[in-house]
Structures are given as structure tokens and as C-alpha cells.
Picture (cartoon, rainbow, N blue to C red):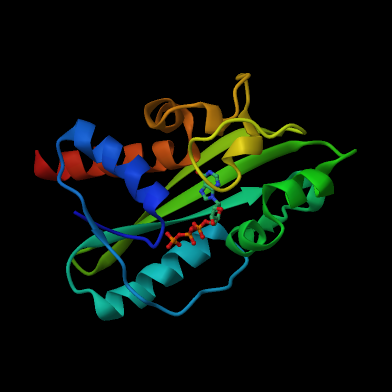
Length: 182
Ligand code: ITT
């Protein structure tokens, strides 16, 4: 199976899960027009449609957003831009004094035999005032999952995959791929 992403961390997390499932995974970079839409589902779907114009093999990609209800869902579909500009410290400043509840949402889009299927995963948690940890990427140092004391950046890849938005979406994808084989 081919994963299309420009993000090495995403590839490493997903490759660890495919490795456990015994399904070979190939990483491809495909240049396509940046999609700006209101929801993670639509960005993921439209990105998949764009990549399909370039890549004729079966593949999947995923889009992830960090949603903060106290900020009316911001950064949500702008997560990539926000990470590259104000970063997690900017998010901490925006959340300061407000309800820190947040969630990550990942939507995987699988292009297979001419159709697109989606698999989603959500991780609820909160933005911490204190950045901690050095693993992972993006907003991981300030995100503490519900019921946990460690930030995602204090967990190793396997621990993060067991509970994360991406881990859940990719588990659903892997279950689907396994049912196709049997
Ligand atoms: P693609 O090429 O796969 O699109 P990307 O890095 O642009 O890679 P997204 O648009 O899906 O990925 O992600 C938006 C941003 O959200 C990303 O730049 C990260 O900073 C952040 N992010 C995504 N997944 C995350 C995770 O598991 N933990 C922390 N931050 C994450």
C-alpha cells in the first residue's frame, strides 16, 4: 500500500502500525494543489481527488486538524499554517484563561479500484500550559490526552498510536484492508 504525505512523522507513526499488521507500506511524495476547505473530511477527500490525477495506483493519505472548542474550533483546517507560524506556543497563548479542552481529528482517504473510502479517528484531550517531551511533532508537546498525565510528546510511537486520532483512523483502515484479503 502507498501512503502519500510530505510529513516524515506521519509516515513513521503509520509505518509502525502497518509493520505490526504485516502489510508493506511505501512512502510517496506527490505534489498537488494545497486544498483550503472548512473540514478535515473535505480537505482529505479533495486532496485524494487531486493526488488521483497524478498517481494511478491504490494509495491513501490523511488530513489531521487540532480543534479547540473555546476558540470556535480554531485552528482546525488551518492547523498546518498555524503550526508553521505561531506554533504550539501561540496556541498556548490563545487558550490561556479559557477552557483548554481540545481534540485532534484524522481523516484517512483511501483511493482503491477507482473509489474513495474514508476512515476517521478522534483524540480528546486538553492544551497544557507547560510544553513537555521531545518525541512526536506539531502540537504534541502541549497536548495531554483525556485520562493521561503525559503529553503526546512524552510517549513513544507505539504508546501514541494506541490512543491517537491517527492510530484510530489507521486501525480502521488496516481492519478494512485485512477483510479485503480474507
Ligand atoms: P501532509 O503532507 O500529509 O498533508 P502535513 O504536515 O501538512 O502533511 P496535516 O495538514 O494533516 O499534515 O497536519 C496539519 C498540522 O497539524 C501539521 O503540520 C502538524 O503540525 C499538526 N499535526 C498533525 N498531526 C499531529 C499529531 O499527531 N500531533 C501533533 N500535531 C499534529
